[in-house]
Image (cartoon, rainbow, N blue to C red; front, top):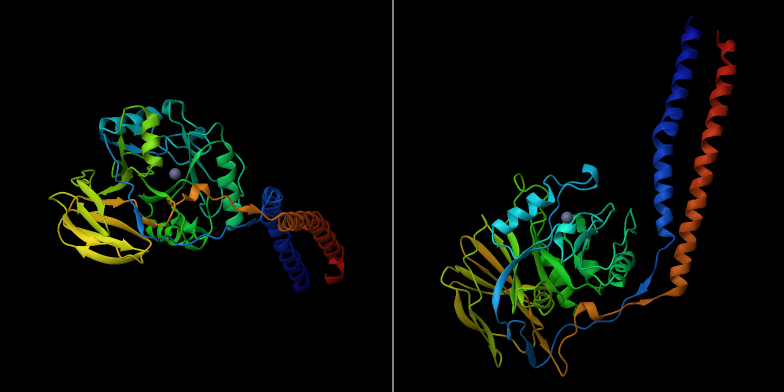
Length: 403
Ligand SMILES: [Zn+2]
Protein backbone atom coordinates (compact mmCIF):
# COMPACT_ATOMS: atom_id res chain seq x y z
CA UNK A 1 0.00 0.00 0.00
CA UNK A 2 2.79 2.38 0.98
CA UNK A 3 4.45 1.54 -2.35
CA UNK A 4 1.28 2.44 -4.30
CA UNK A 5 1.05 5.81 -2.54
CA UNK A 6 4.71 6.40 -3.17
CA UNK A 7 4.25 5.67 -6.87
CA UNK A 8 1.28 8.01 -7.14
CA UNK A 9 3.16 10.80 -5.42
CA UNK A 10 6.08 10.31 -7.79
CA UNK A 11 3.74 10.48 -10.78
CA UNK A 12 2.19 13.67 -9.37
CA UNK A 13 5.59 15.24 -8.75
CA UNK A 14 6.60 14.49 -12.34
CA UNK A 15 3.37 16.07 -13.54
CA UNK A 16 4.17 19.47 -11.93
CA UNK A 17 7.24 20.33 -14.08
CA UNK A 18 5.45 18.99 -17.15
CA UNK A 19 2.47 21.23 -16.40
CA UNK A 20 4.71 24.29 -15.84
CA UNK A 21 6.56 23.70 -19.11
CA UNK A 22 3.49 22.88 -21.16
CA UNK A 23 0.97 25.43 -19.94
CA UNK A 24 3.00 28.31 -18.50
CA UNK A 25 6.56 28.49 -19.76
CA UNK A 26 5.98 27.24 -23.30
CA UNK A 27 3.39 29.93 -24.26
CA UNK A 28 5.59 32.61 -22.65
CA UNK A 29 8.54 31.20 -24.58
CA UNK A 30 6.64 31.46 -27.86
CA UNK A 31 5.54 35.04 -27.10
CA UNK A 32 9.16 35.92 -26.29
CA UNK A 33 10.35 34.25 -29.52
CA UNK A 34 7.76 36.09 -31.62
CA UNK A 35 8.76 39.37 -29.95
CA UNK A 36 12.38 38.70 -30.89
CA UNK A 37 11.33 38.72 -34.57
CA UNK A 38 11.00 42.53 -34.35
CA UNK A 39 14.57 42.74 -33.12
CA UNK A 40 15.90 41.23 -36.37
CA UNK A 41 15.24 44.77 -37.71
CA UNK A 42 17.51 46.26 -35.07
CA UNK A 43 19.93 49.07 -35.91
CA UNK A 44 23.07 50.36 -34.20
CA UNK A 45 23.92 54.04 -34.47
CA UNK A 46 27.11 55.98 -33.96
CA UNK A 47 25.80 59.03 -32.15
CA UNK A 48 27.14 62.41 -33.24
CA UNK A 49 29.45 64.30 -30.90
CA UNK A 50 27.56 67.28 -29.48
CA UNK A 51 28.95 70.14 -27.49
CA UNK A 52 27.36 72.02 -24.59
CA UNK A 53 26.00 75.46 -25.48
CA UNK A 54 28.40 78.36 -25.16
CA UNK A 55 29.41 81.67 -26.71
CA UNK A 56 29.04 85.40 -26.33
CA UNK A 57 25.51 85.62 -27.78
CA UNK A 58 22.22 84.66 -26.14
CA UNK A 59 19.37 83.06 -28.08
CA UNK A 60 16.07 84.04 -26.48
CA UNK A 61 13.03 82.22 -27.95
CA UNK A 62 10.74 84.88 -26.44
CA UNK A 63 12.48 87.78 -28.18
CA UNK A 64 10.04 88.05 -31.11
CA UNK A 65 6.89 86.55 -29.66
CA UNK A 66 3.81 88.35 -30.82
CA UNK A 67 0.08 87.94 -31.22
CA UNK A 68 -2.16 86.20 -28.73
CA UNK A 69 -1.55 83.18 -26.52
CA UNK A 70 -3.62 80.00 -27.04
CA UNK A 71 -3.98 76.82 -24.93
CA UNK A 72 -3.34 73.37 -26.39
CA UNK A 73 -3.20 69.78 -25.15
CA UNK A 74 -1.66 67.13 -27.42
CA UNK A 75 -1.94 64.04 -25.22
CA UNK A 76 -5.23 62.48 -24.05
CA UNK A 77 -6.84 59.08 -24.55
CA UNK A 78 -10.42 58.19 -25.46
CA UNK A 79 -12.05 54.78 -25.85
CA UNK A 80 -10.24 53.03 -28.66
CA UNK A 81 -9.45 49.59 -30.10
CA UNK A 82 -12.73 48.15 -28.74
CA UNK A 83 -11.81 49.07 -25.16
CA UNK A 84 -8.53 47.12 -25.26
CA UNK A 85 -6.47 50.26 -24.45
CA UNK A 86 -6.91 52.50 -21.42
CA UNK A 87 -9.35 55.33 -22.28
CA UNK A 88 -12.84 55.77 -20.87
CA UNK A 89 -14.54 58.71 -22.61
CA UNK A 90 -15.78 59.06 -26.17
CA UNK A 91 -13.63 61.30 -28.43
CA UNK A 92 -16.56 63.77 -28.65
CA UNK A 93 -16.84 63.92 -24.83
CA UNK A 94 -13.07 64.38 -24.47
CA UNK A 95 -12.69 67.11 -27.09
CA UNK A 96 -15.88 68.85 -25.93
CA UNK A 97 -14.58 69.07 -22.34
CA UNK A 98 -11.36 70.76 -23.52
CA UNK A 99 -13.12 73.23 -25.82
CA UNK A 100 -15.40 74.15 -22.92
CA UNK A 101 -12.27 75.13 -20.98
CA UNK A 102 -11.13 77.43 -23.78
CA UNK A 103 -8.50 75.23 -25.43
CA UNK A 104 -7.68 76.11 -29.05
CA UNK A 105 -6.59 72.52 -29.68
CA UNK A 106 -7.55 69.30 -27.87
CA UNK A 107 -5.61 66.33 -29.15
CA UNK A 108 -6.93 62.77 -28.92
CA UNK A 109 -3.72 60.76 -29.02
CA UNK A 110 -4.76 57.12 -28.91
CA UNK A 111 -2.22 54.35 -29.43
CA UNK A 112 -1.42 53.84 -33.10
CA UNK A 113 -4.64 55.60 -34.13
CA UNK A 114 -5.28 59.08 -35.49
CA UNK A 115 -8.72 60.30 -34.47
CA UNK A 116 -10.72 61.83 -37.30
CA UNK A 117 -12.13 64.49 -34.95
CA UNK A 118 -8.63 65.94 -34.53
CA UNK A 119 -8.68 67.27 -38.06
CA UNK A 120 -6.89 69.32 -39.35
CA UNK A 121 -4.11 68.55 -36.79
CA UNK A 122 -3.39 64.85 -36.41
CA UNK A 123 -1.74 63.23 -33.40
CA UNK A 124 -1.30 59.70 -32.05
CA UNK A 125 0.81 57.94 -29.42
CA UNK A 126 3.42 55.43 -30.54
CA UNK A 127 4.70 52.73 -28.19
CA UNK A 128 3.96 49.13 -27.30
CA UNK A 129 6.91 48.01 -25.18
CA UNK A 130 7.70 46.97 -21.63
CA UNK A 131 9.41 50.14 -20.37
CA UNK A 132 7.02 52.80 -21.73
CA UNK A 133 9.34 54.26 -24.36
CA UNK A 134 6.49 56.23 -25.91
CA UNK A 135 6.37 59.05 -28.45
CA UNK A 136 3.69 61.38 -29.73
CA UNK A 137 3.62 61.86 -33.49
CA UNK A 138 2.10 65.17 -34.61
CA UNK A 139 0.84 65.54 -38.17
CA UNK A 140 2.30 62.30 -39.57
CA UNK A 141 1.52 61.22 -43.13
CA UNK A 142 0.78 57.69 -41.83
CA UNK A 143 0.96 55.59 -38.65
CA UNK A 144 4.13 53.61 -37.81
CA UNK A 145 3.04 50.25 -36.34
CA UNK A 146 6.52 48.85 -35.85
CA UNK A 147 8.02 48.80 -32.34
CA UNK A 148 10.58 46.82 -30.33
CA UNK A 149 8.12 45.23 -27.88
CA UNK A 150 10.45 44.14 -25.05
CA UNK A 151 13.36 46.30 -23.83
CA UNK A 152 14.92 49.01 -26.01
CA UNK A 153 18.47 50.31 -26.07
CA UNK A 154 19.31 53.88 -27.11
CA UNK A 155 19.83 52.92 -30.78
CA UNK A 156 16.44 51.20 -30.93
CA UNK A 157 14.77 54.28 -29.39
CA UNK A 158 16.57 56.38 -32.03
CA UNK A 159 15.32 54.02 -34.74
CA UNK A 160 11.70 54.65 -33.70
CA UNK A 161 12.30 58.43 -33.77
CA UNK A 162 13.72 58.07 -37.31
CA UNK A 163 10.80 55.93 -38.46
CA UNK A 164 8.35 58.58 -37.19
CA UNK A 165 10.41 61.28 -38.91
CA UNK A 166 10.22 59.27 -42.15
CA UNK A 167 6.44 59.79 -41.94
CA UNK A 168 7.03 63.57 -41.62
CA UNK A 169 5.85 63.64 -38.00
CA UNK A 170 6.87 66.18 -35.42
CA UNK A 171 8.17 63.89 -32.67
CA UNK A 172 7.56 64.38 -28.95
CA UNK A 173 9.36 62.15 -26.42
CA UNK A 174 6.40 61.32 -24.14
CA UNK A 175 6.85 61.33 -20.33
CA UNK A 176 10.60 60.34 -20.50
CA UNK A 177 10.83 59.76 -16.74
CA UNK A 178 7.92 57.27 -16.71
CA UNK A 179 9.66 53.89 -16.09
CA UNK A 180 12.79 55.60 -17.46
CA UNK A 181 11.32 55.15 -20.95
CA UNK A 182 13.87 57.72 -22.14
CA UNK A 183 16.46 57.84 -19.37
CA UNK A 184 18.91 60.65 -18.58
CA UNK A 185 21.61 58.45 -20.17
CA UNK A 186 19.52 58.08 -23.37
CA UNK A 187 18.95 61.84 -23.50
CA UNK A 188 22.70 62.48 -23.76
CA UNK A 189 22.66 60.79 -27.17
CA UNK A 190 19.16 60.82 -28.73
CA UNK A 191 18.43 63.38 -31.43
CA UNK A 192 16.03 63.89 -34.31
CA UNK A 193 13.04 64.64 -32.04
CA UNK A 194 11.36 68.06 -31.71
CA UNK A 195 9.85 68.27 -28.21
CA UNK A 196 10.18 66.74 -24.76
CA UNK A 197 7.02 66.19 -22.73
CA UNK A 198 8.46 67.63 -19.52
CA UNK A 199 5.05 68.01 -17.85
CA UNK A 200 2.58 65.10 -17.81
CA UNK A 201 0.29 64.14 -14.93
CA UNK A 202 2.15 60.83 -14.44
CA UNK A 203 5.66 62.27 -14.30
CA UNK A 204 7.68 65.49 -14.45
CA UNK A 205 10.73 64.91 -16.66
CA UNK A 206 12.83 68.03 -16.01
CA UNK A 207 15.97 65.97 -15.20
CA UNK A 208 15.74 64.22 -18.56
CA UNK A 209 15.20 67.58 -20.31
CA UNK A 210 18.30 68.98 -18.58
CA UNK A 211 20.30 65.86 -19.56
CA UNK A 212 19.49 66.67 -23.21
CA UNK A 213 20.14 70.41 -22.88
CA UNK A 214 23.43 69.94 -21.00
CA UNK A 215 24.75 67.91 -23.94
CA UNK A 216 23.72 70.52 -26.51
CA UNK A 217 20.42 68.90 -27.61
CA UNK A 218 18.03 71.83 -27.91
CA UNK A 219 14.36 70.80 -27.78
CA UNK A 220 11.36 72.79 -26.59
CA UNK A 221 9.05 71.90 -23.76
CA UNK A 222 5.69 70.22 -24.14
CA UNK A 223 3.09 70.01 -21.35
CA UNK A 224 0.09 67.68 -21.55
CA UNK A 225 -2.53 66.08 -19.30
CA UNK A 226 -2.25 62.52 -20.71
CA UNK A 227 -5.67 61.87 -19.23
CA UNK A 228 -7.45 58.54 -19.74
CA UNK A 229 -10.64 59.60 -17.95
CA UNK A 230 -11.81 63.21 -17.67
CA UNK A 231 -13.77 62.47 -14.48
CA UNK A 232 -11.35 60.25 -12.54
CA UNK A 233 -7.91 61.54 -13.57
CA UNK A 234 -6.39 65.04 -13.25
CA UNK A 235 -7.60 66.72 -16.46
CA UNK A 236 -7.43 70.31 -17.74
CA UNK A 237 -4.54 70.88 -15.29
CA UNK A 238 -1.42 70.83 -17.51
CA UNK A 239 -1.20 72.53 -20.89
CA UNK A 240 0.87 74.41 -23.46
CA UNK A 241 0.48 78.13 -24.02
CA UNK A 242 1.59 79.12 -27.51
CA UNK A 243 2.03 82.55 -29.07
CA UNK A 244 0.20 82.61 -32.41
CA UNK A 245 -0.16 85.27 -35.07
CA UNK A 246 -3.38 83.77 -36.47
CA UNK A 247 -5.99 81.17 -35.53
CA UNK A 248 -5.03 78.45 -37.99
CA UNK A 249 -3.34 75.24 -36.76
CA UNK A 250 -0.24 75.87 -38.89
CA UNK A 251 0.41 79.03 -36.88
CA UNK A 252 0.20 76.97 -33.69
CA UNK A 253 2.73 74.40 -34.96
CA UNK A 254 4.96 77.21 -36.19
CA UNK A 255 4.87 78.85 -32.74
CA UNK A 256 5.69 75.53 -31.05
CA UNK A 257 8.63 74.82 -33.35
CA UNK A 258 10.11 78.27 -32.78
CA UNK A 259 9.91 77.79 -29.01
CA UNK A 260 7.28 80.54 -28.75
CA UNK A 261 5.57 78.55 -26.03
CA UNK A 262 5.82 77.45 -22.41
CA UNK A 263 4.42 74.73 -20.17
CA UNK A 264 1.77 75.35 -17.52
CA UNK A 265 1.10 73.15 -14.49
CA UNK A 266 -1.81 74.08 -12.23
CA UNK A 267 -3.32 72.96 -8.94
CA UNK A 268 -6.94 73.09 -10.14
CA UNK A 269 -6.94 74.33 -13.72
CA UNK A 270 -6.35 78.06 -13.07
CA UNK A 271 -3.30 79.86 -14.41
CA UNK A 272 -2.67 83.29 -12.92
CA UNK A 273 0.86 83.72 -14.35
CA UNK A 274 2.05 85.07 -17.68
CA UNK A 275 5.27 86.22 -19.29
CA UNK A 276 4.90 89.99 -19.33
CA UNK A 277 8.59 90.39 -20.04
CA UNK A 278 11.54 88.13 -20.74
CA UNK A 279 14.21 90.11 -22.54
CA UNK A 280 17.99 90.15 -22.76
CA UNK A 281 20.23 93.19 -22.77
CA UNK A 282 23.94 92.40 -22.88
CA UNK A 283 24.35 89.67 -20.25
CA UNK A 284 21.35 90.83 -18.22
CA UNK A 285 18.03 89.06 -18.25
CA UNK A 286 14.96 91.16 -17.45
CA UNK A 287 11.86 89.27 -16.34
CA UNK A 288 8.27 89.89 -15.29
CA UNK A 289 5.83 87.04 -14.56
CA UNK A 290 3.08 89.21 -13.04
CA UNK A 291 1.95 90.17 -9.54
CA UNK A 292 0.80 86.69 -8.50
CA UNK A 293 4.25 85.13 -8.87
CA UNK A 294 5.60 84.11 -5.45
CA UNK A 295 8.95 82.80 -6.62
CA UNK A 296 10.99 82.67 -9.80
CA UNK A 297 13.63 79.95 -9.95
CA UNK A 298 16.51 80.02 -12.44
CA UNK A 299 18.02 76.72 -13.56
CA UNK A 300 21.53 77.18 -14.96
CA UNK A 301 22.99 74.23 -16.92
CA UNK A 302 20.67 71.86 -15.06
CA UNK A 303 21.42 73.21 -11.56
CA UNK A 304 19.23 75.56 -9.46
CA UNK A 305 21.14 78.85 -9.60
CA UNK A 306 19.03 81.56 -8.00
CA UNK A 307 15.53 82.03 -6.58
CA UNK A 308 13.82 85.40 -6.73
CA UNK A 309 10.92 85.97 -4.33
CA UNK A 310 8.61 88.10 -6.42
CA UNK A 311 7.54 88.18 -10.07
CA UNK A 312 9.85 90.78 -11.60
CA UNK A 313 13.51 91.70 -11.60
CA UNK A 314 16.75 91.09 -13.47
CA UNK A 315 19.59 88.63 -13.26
CA UNK A 316 23.04 88.18 -14.78
CA UNK A 317 23.41 85.38 -17.36
CA UNK A 318 26.99 84.27 -16.52
CA UNK A 319 29.18 84.44 -19.67
CA UNK A 320 30.56 80.92 -19.08
CA UNK A 321 27.11 79.29 -18.67
CA UNK A 322 25.36 77.33 -21.45
CA UNK A 323 21.65 77.89 -20.80
CA UNK A 324 19.13 79.26 -18.34
CA UNK A 325 15.54 78.11 -18.00
CA UNK A 326 12.99 79.56 -15.59
CA UNK A 327 10.32 78.03 -13.35
CA UNK A 328 7.96 80.70 -11.95
CA UNK A 329 5.24 79.78 -9.42
CA UNK A 330 2.19 81.30 -7.79
CA UNK A 331 -0.22 79.58 -5.38
CA UNK A 332 -2.29 78.35 -8.34
CA UNK A 333 0.15 77.60 -11.10
CA UNK A 334 3.71 77.13 -12.37
CA UNK A 335 5.23 78.28 -15.67
CA UNK A 336 8.14 76.33 -17.19
CA UNK A 337 9.87 78.47 -19.82
CA UNK A 338 11.97 77.24 -22.70
CA UNK A 339 15.73 77.70 -22.23
CA UNK A 340 17.65 80.82 -23.22
CA UNK A 341 20.81 79.51 -24.83
CA UNK A 342 24.31 80.85 -25.41
CA UNK A 343 25.88 80.51 -28.86
CA UNK A 344 28.94 81.64 -30.80
CA UNK A 345 29.00 82.54 -34.49
CA UNK A 346 25.90 80.57 -35.52
CA UNK A 347 22.48 80.22 -33.86
CA UNK A 348 22.19 76.95 -31.91
CA UNK A 349 21.07 73.85 -33.81
CA UNK A 350 17.92 72.04 -32.69
CA UNK A 351 18.14 68.37 -31.57
CA UNK A 352 15.84 67.65 -34.54
CA UNK A 353 18.66 68.67 -36.89
CA UNK A 354 21.23 66.12 -35.69
CA UNK A 355 21.29 62.85 -37.63
CA UNK A 356 23.23 59.94 -36.09
CA UNK A 357 25.04 57.68 -38.54
CA UNK A 358 24.24 54.02 -39.00
CA UNK A 359 26.96 51.56 -38.01
CA UNK A 360 26.52 48.85 -40.69
CA UNK A 361 28.85 46.12 -39.31
CA UNK A 362 27.39 46.42 -35.79
CA UNK A 363 23.83 46.54 -37.15
CA UNK A 364 24.21 43.29 -39.13
CA UNK A 365 26.13 41.60 -36.32
CA UNK A 366 23.28 42.37 -33.89
CA UNK A 367 20.67 41.21 -36.40
CA UNK A 368 22.59 37.94 -36.77
CA UNK A 369 22.65 37.52 -32.97
CA UNK A 370 18.88 38.03 -32.71
CA UNK A 371 18.26 35.56 -35.58
CA UNK A 372 20.48 33.01 -33.82
CA UNK A 373 18.58 33.60 -30.54
CA UNK A 374 15.26 32.95 -32.34
CA UNK A 375 16.53 29.67 -33.82
CA UNK A 376 17.84 28.66 -30.39
CA UNK A 377 14.46 29.41 -28.77
CA UNK A 378 12.56 27.41 -31.42
CA UNK A 379 14.86 24.41 -30.91
CA UNK A 380 14.41 24.67 -27.16
CA UNK A 381 10.62 25.02 -27.34
CA UNK A 382 10.08 22.19 -29.82
CA UNK A 383 12.67 19.88 -28.20
CA UNK A 384 11.84 20.14 -24.49
CA UNK A 385 8.22 19.05 -24.60
CA UNK A 386 8.60 15.61 -26.30
CA UNK A 387 11.55 14.82 -24.02
CA UNK A 388 9.45 15.63 -20.95
CA UNK A 389 6.60 13.52 -22.31
CA UNK A 390 8.96 10.57 -22.91
CA UNK A 391 10.26 10.86 -19.37
CA UNK A 392 6.72 11.03 -18.00
CA UNK A 393 5.67 7.93 -20.02
CA UNK A 394 8.71 5.91 -18.98
CA UNK A 395 7.98 6.84 -15.36
CA UNK A 396 4.41 5.48 -15.76
CA UNK A 397 5.59 2.17 -17.30
CA UNK A 398 7.81 1.43 -14.32
CA UNK A 399 4.85 1.76 -11.93
CA UNK A 400 4.11 -1.99 -11.38
CA UNK A 401 7.59 -2.52 -9.94
CA UNK A 402 6.61 -0.38 -6.96
CA UNK A 403 3.28 -2.04 -6.15
ZN1 LIG B 1 -0.56 58.48 -23.37
